[in-house]
Image 1: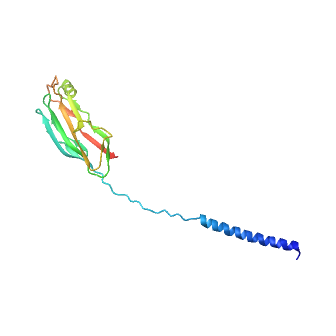
Image 2: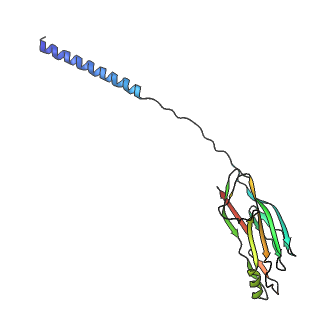
Image 3: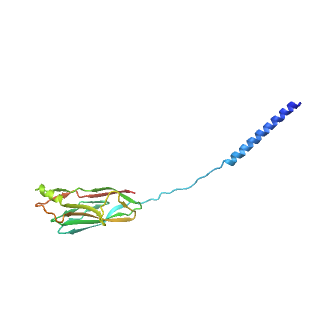
Length: 191
């Protein structure tokens, strides 16, 4: 074998060895750079009760006013009766708005009826009554109940619904006037 062939053969051996070393180095480098990452955990969803309702409904009067207690259904007061006879007469229904659940609530809808006055004998009397009628819904502190009010879980707010004939009204009807449209509905949503 001549020197040129020997040099060529050595060059091939060196090339094969260099390629093997390079493959081994790349394999080691890949193994060193390749790591298995493991992420594990768990999550739970707790059951939270939803319980908004009226409670402790009571009534009080001033003057000679009389009343019939309302039907109470969750967050609806309906079918109550009020008889007002003279200026200054009023009926106030007090009640608690209770959140017995585990979720904070926000008042999403407030439907307070619009009083409608009617008389079988006199439209004038109906107008006199509606012009002098007070119909309010407030918390015990005097602020108005409004959409967006919050009610935290496991708390209550005391409220009052008042129907009154203005004290100091200059006119009173000469005939009986019926007042309809006084129902009250509050709808709470999750906060």
